Length: 213
Image (cartoon, rainbow, N blue to C red; front, side, top):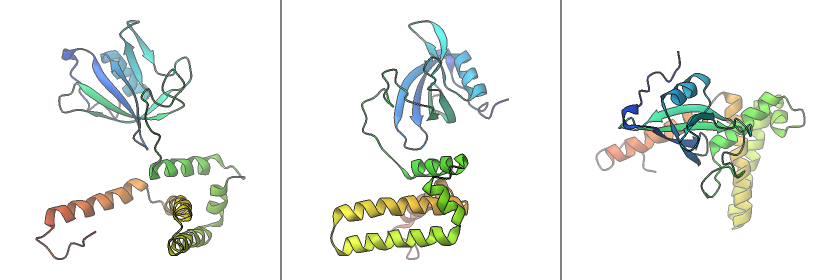
């Protein structure tokens, strides 16, 4: 039994085209192919398995390098013949040693901050600034968040773009720590924003009680 049993790919058309995407920053990592056996192994082990067309055999991504691609979620397209696999890579995905098989600009999102904070908290590293803040509790965390937010204001008043950029990065990090301590996920915040955006688009020009952004 797997939580992905609801997915029913159409293998009558041949191999299933598979796209690996990083689950936080949404970077496209690689494209591969699965037969039915590779798909079943991926479901059961929750790591990415593929079928090699050149070697004509099953292979687990990272079987030799150790850079296993841990599955966080999977989605079939509307025709059930292509699969999007959201992964948490154990290392570079490409055999050349790069994160992606595509030449993409690197990106970093609030979910990457969230994942980093979660990893620090799980490590119990006494030298970690994140763990220092978490050990001090909400008063310390909120104080640091407020201080960093005020630094952004100062940078804006000084019209110093570099200062604003650096301090805004500090604000986002400290917000991540505050959210983690409070048990609020980035996905929950995104859901609120998405709902507000949807309401605004649905009722724009029709209702006066929907706040404009």
